[in-house]
Length: 400
Length: 224
Ligand SMILES: Nc1ncnc2c1ncn2[C@@H]1O[C@H](COP(=O)(O)OP(=O)(O)OP(=O)(O)O)[C@@H](O)[C@H]1O
Ligand SMILES: [Mg+2]
Image (cartoon, rainbow over all chains, first blue to last red; front, side, top):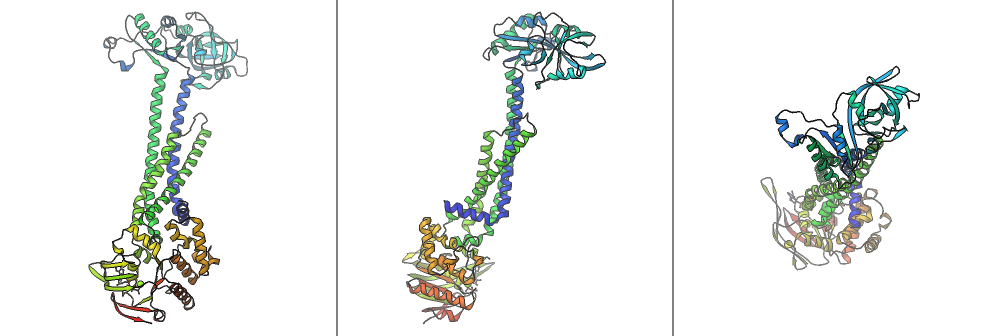
């Protein structure tokens, strides 16, 4: 065995350009599998992390039936779905497994202080939202606890809004004009980054009742519910659906989705994407096998006299086949190793360039890439090996 | 030891059938020194390749040590080549990327012998042939005569009973050619059966038995 490896190693070194070409083909194939899957996997983990930052055990309720529910009497009659109201939100607090509940309203309005002004997305919310979204304050306090119906003229703003409207001046305690009303700034959100959909730094938050007045609506955009445990998700969801159906005169006109369901969908889509790109790269790797076959065929014809000589010295056909296959597998293994190194380097570079994306190639991708490389190397050199074994030694020795 | 009976070897070249060997009968005993001479294309190499199991006859029987070797499997034939037959070629046929010692070692590797024993054997043979100081040289760093010595070392490392040489001096100058012939005759004196194809009548006449070939047949035989 050691002699075999030694001999093949010598043969590989004896034809450096051929060896390098094969190594290149193999390592590019393997490294592209690794880089592509690490990108896909990184994107998947990025999205999952983003969802996790939304908060755990989250139930999201919005008005209107989801499309998948099909036709129901209200759509038949062309009715628009009933609004989701603050009363609905309050009714939902009664379940013992509901830890926090945050009704949300959105709209956009001009926000100004002194001569500076800009248009901002206004979030109508309640005291609970801070804890529910895991946000932090850098200064002051959040919206006060208490009655959801109270339209207190206070606001909590993101750090970027603070910078733009107040500059270096103290913002806390100052008055801010939002639309045609005045609000006192009571808190500044810490710029802890982004979470899906909302850029914390560019948010202006006011009590939900104030938002309803400002945008002249009794309807809510969403109700977010944090459930106490994962096991309670389904019962709470059912409770929400039942309660709201009861409150809405028997119409099932709301949609409640769990964060898990959304996450699972994204997870599925992105995993499929990762498998797909990994698979495509693996196919390109298999195509590299055809190159290997050609190169090995050339190798056999380049070395006919050597193979003929080995036969004259008493090499059996099996020994010749083993020799050629070992050579091909050694090449593939070396190429695969090089490819893994290149691929890891590539994903390291990606991680450096995009620190947000955890671009690590999944283990299955590395194992698949390496074994596809080895197997194609082996399979595609079977033909050249058998050709070498069938070589007529007399003819081979004649050639020069 | 060797018995050839009604050996034919035909080659199909285009639509023409070439009779490279045409009804050859030959018996060779152990330890003989035999030379084969004849004009180009008379079938000398074809006969030698057949004797060395590199080729199979189109018809006829070949008995080696009482065994019909034409009916052996590929693997068995390879074993016979490895253990009982040594080849020396006009073109030396050394593997260029291997050192002299590694070239000599090849038959032992193919026979599956342990490295330690291999190295001892290689060292011994190369010393005998006075090339041990060249053992780490690549073939292109050796003279023609030295290359043929390495080839002879390789051919004899498994202590075969038969040594087949196809124009072993064809690519050598007179002096190193003579050295090689003396070396081969030396091996013959120690018991190996030496069968040598040559163009050189002077060399051919040194053999005890001299075969003359023409158009694929043995025309006559002389003894020294
Ligand atoms: N593989 C082959 N295919 C076709 N014809 C062949 C083959 N090998 C040998 N021959 C023919 O067989 C005949 C004998 O060839 P061989 O090589 O035995 O001659 P030789 O006596 O060794 O000649 P030389 O002295 O030139 O080496 C020649 O006519 C040659 O052309
Ligand atoms: Mg010849």
